[in-house]
Length: 114
Length: 109
Image 1 (cartoon, rainbow over the protein chains, first blue to last red):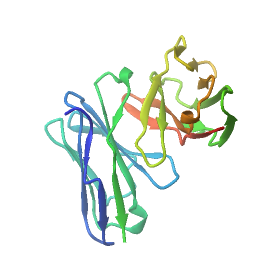
Image 2: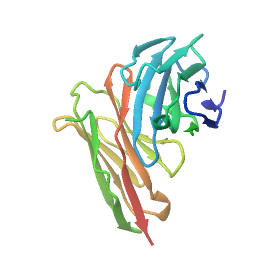
Image 3: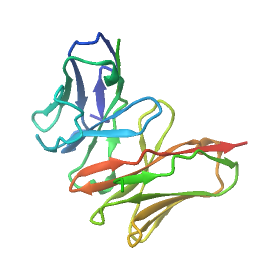
């Protein structure tokens, strides 16, 4: 596609429910990144993929968080048993294999856990 | 030392002035550096890459100092529309990239 597409754009969920956030990167971008940003805070690295593999999962806050990527394209970030502290904007970015051209972000998913 | 550090600001600068801010990084092996701009409640957008020899794009100049491990961004003739948060981005290993917390810039009329 023309840009990075994230869905849903907004999600309100009850505490304890599971949520799935989707990221559709730019076609041909092999690298895909997930970040989250709480209100007024910086971007917190969660995980990145090179193709379908995730070399670094160290940013995932707990074992309630998982992510996968299939076909070197779409990625899903799953949060199980959501907690109020999970409320944030979840941002996805993608890039070409050589990162000299920077990273393009989607417009994010605003997650609110009530 | 944090992987990527920035002065959070805010920098309050009158319109037309020149402003500069730095970003330090801890991994001497880092190879890729960028400046991003983020407007309130929007996603970050690429402002410019930072090249070893320094580079300029209109009113914006980016520089890299490998010896002291920092990058800088200079904005000349600042405009009201330059008000935003400026994020530095560094690759800390292979393709893993880390964003600084950002520097808030307010251009005053």
